[in-house]
Length: 331
Image (cartoon, rainbow, N blue to C red; front, side, top):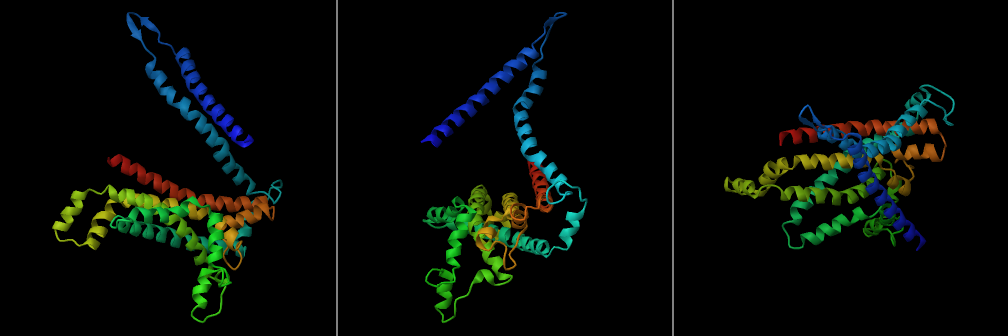
């Protein structure tokens, strides 16, 4: 009950503070830049000046928050990457040189590349296929709801579910129950080198397929029916209509979904942490950074690893923004 009251007070206080800022800043702006009235018989208005300043009154707090919670940490992380494990002594490029000889770093880079290829590709493919097929059956909405449901589960919760699926005990693990049903002995799929990473990737594909399905389904509904009818009249079959008419028209949405999942993949560590903790050659960049920061307490090296993740994400975001700007300019 106390937590509920605290939440209510926080919401009321926060909304009240925003309203106070909204009306107070407008009132202050109107007082600081009032109309000058008649000057030499001409009415001098400062409305244009006020309108140029007014948007910054509302964007300003967001920019301050971004600066404090995004820009400053990024600059501080860059600064710490040139320091030792305590973040005090300057060591230059020692952390960068250390990464070149760190087998765990090389392993995490290779695994991240596999995750970037496998997860976004299959999430988009499965999401697109389901979005198309679900609209063709009467129980399609029920199927969509079930497929989207994993999105409501945290990565750790999903990992716990799949840990039961992968359990070596066939009485618990579904996978081994099926495998041993053919007369084979149980295996621990999470300890099979190389392939164990794909079993981890499958969890994220399971989660992200619902996300891709919802967005792509909405995009497919925006394809003009007249275009599809014209294609069918011209003799195109369903497969040709799908690949040559529908897919090109929703390519923008496909790209947005793909880049969003790519960014999610670059940051993933919950699944690896909960399933294998990076053992058996399953280490990824974010989990390695977590290990160095909160287990080895090596601030300098962890900051370098954080920079690598940030540098990998930034180009994807830039390409996505440029694409959105081009599409906006074409409208």
